[in-house]
Image (cartoon, rainbow, N blue to C red):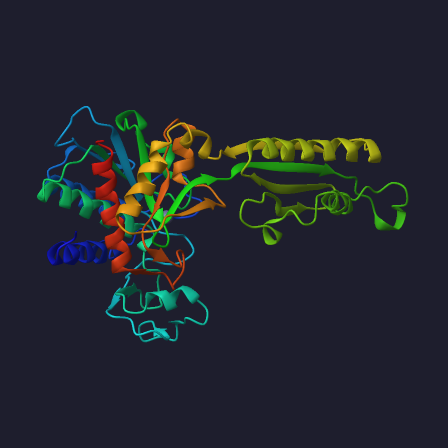
Length: 412
Ligand SMILES: [Zn+2]
């Protein structure tokens, strides 16, 4: 479906986007957290103008939005397509030197002139990529396929729909900042983004379709002790550090991130800080099922109560639990078409859908919380957040085809 020229422009677009340093900055209070994101947002604005989209806006927080009305039926559903401008905090995105490897022969791939290389011995998926066109960075930075591939795929899909005058539903697009630090969506102009449902184009290997994520909360358990000289501490000292260790032993030892996978939930002790007088234990609580999630929160509260009864401390242990995000499936299942059309589009494109549950949160989870169903579709990339990040041109083409096919299917 993509001719040579469209394929060339898909690649050119992606390579151009990787030249913007859009790494988001941890601990930022304002969004966008880096100027590179503003520059990329402005560039995308120009591209959308050239493509002839409507209602193009770049907000002061660098959220880019635009509208492509249906060329067939103005009363057709409106779908949203979303990708993020920023790249991960773990790895620099400055001066990215992307390299295109045509017809990958298999075996190790040396990155740039340095000592970094990518080997099928570590990454078994490389065996399946023989013969494909791979794009990698030079070993000094990440590539930025997460999520600039998503942006390039959306842009290319829009241009193909326009140029070939292919029948499509109403489409809204949004390119958002600071996804990697969970800051961007706070400034998302949802009121200007009325959609029946949306997709983030932010997944990994070809076929990935994700619409379930954790229900998430954090808990802070505070334990207060009494300090006194060790020489005269007998029956007087209350060591909050020892109490905290004991409290931690009350949690199920095999329900931790390092011992769970798939749809299993966990308690994660993420921070243990303090001294004899006061300790804070920070936990992440995660579960896919709402019922079990509530049980986990209740379990922590019960553990605190039992601990207080057993110890009869002067200052009881307290716990503060804060919800972080919800499983988007609660909303997605009320709009089953969002998943059905993505599934069907992949099958039409000869792709076997891979349904996966996200062991984390996404911008889609935030949108679901606001009532917008937003499953996540693959970009065709691997090893996100790493210097070993890579993507195939074939995977990117598949994503473009899936997007244009969804836009056509939504008319039915
Ligand atoms: Zn991403």
